[in-house]
Structures are given as C-alpha cells and as structure tokens.
Image (cartoon, rainbow, N blue to C red; front, side, top):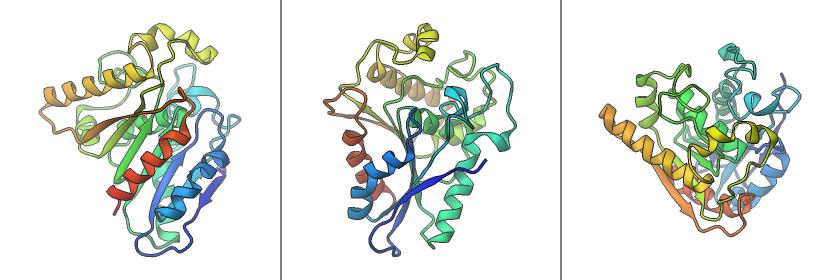
Length: 255
C-alpha cells in the first residue's frame, strides 16, 4: 500500500536539523497533525514527517492503533504488513534524503500514541532516540493477560522487553484527560478490560507506568522510561496543548 506522507520543513535544513515522525490520531488526519507541528518545526529546526494510514487500507483499531499485528478475528498478520514495520524504512528514507544526523524521534497522540507505545514494545530493536506517546486510551500492559491488553500471545519476549526498557520512551499525560466514559463503540465493547486498567486515561497512564517500573525491577533491568503530567485544560482533544511540550523535549533530547 502507498502511504501518503505530509511534511513540515524548517526554513533551512542544516546539520542541526532533526527528524521527528508524528503519528495521527483515529481520524487518520495526517495533514491536520502536520499543521499542528509547523510552528515547532520552524522554531526548533525539526523536520516533521507524518504518514497517513487510511481506514480503507488499515481498518479500525486493529489496523492502526494495534499496529496491524493481528486482525480483528485474531489471525496473525505477516510482519512485513504490520503498520509498525513501516516506521524504520520511513525514518531511514528521510534521514538519507535530507542527509540528517541519525538521531530521530517519534510522537503520537490518542490513537497515534497507542501505535507509538506498541512500536516501542513490539519493535525494541528500532534506533529512535526518543519516543513519546501522549494521552492513549489503554495499554499493552506488562501483565500475563492476552494481547492486546497484555503480553500473552504478544510475541514479545523478556529479551524484547529488556531492550524496550533500555530506550528513551516518554509517556505524556494530560492532567485534564479524565473522562470515565467510552468514546467509541469499540471502546464500549471492551470497556471492562479498559476500565480494569484505571478509571480514566490519566489514571490508566499512571498505572501502566507503575507496572512498567515493577516489571523492569523484577527483571533486574534499568528502565529508561519517563512520565510527565502536562497541566492541560481541554480534556482529551488537546494535541495543541501537548505538541509544544513534546517538541521542546525532542529539541533537547535529539541535539
């Protein structure tokens, strides 16, 4: 499948320009997400690349949020067709096309954050410098419960987990992201499993982070992950509130 890509370039591309891949949310609106990064792209010298995974080619939560690892019937999808497998070639292409330094980052909000945190777990050998997931709805937790909610049948080994924990990954949680109601019919259908992870998105993010710390400790692995609670005001739809924070973090970490 051909994947459209939307780009924001800084005024001048030089040896300090850094690549950030941005994942859109469930509306699959890559252009809007690109537009939200234009200002940061110009002021912080970031080349922002936003791929668009259409609903037609990658349907529903399984096709996009969950990385196209299994389909909704529970059948395994070949690794080459995982949406997660698209990221490394994309990064390599733009690093080479613009002759950029090898440091790059990836950011996702909402459904895009689901994608990013699963990328971190399913693709632990990726060489990103920093991955940021903002305000996702629920998690692939380090518990022994069936995928997509836990490690059972995930194909993620303890070695994979140890490698994932040794990369810089940041969870950005909006302080105002505290709705306790399902926001789509799919979420309503799995809401028992979602709410088992916590009362609302902020709560579920805190719990996931605590579980990850405990899991890393039990494996005797150093966890290079972090969590930041952003003082947002507008509930969940707050990419505008999160982007400036994320952009600054990339600017600092990718230098």
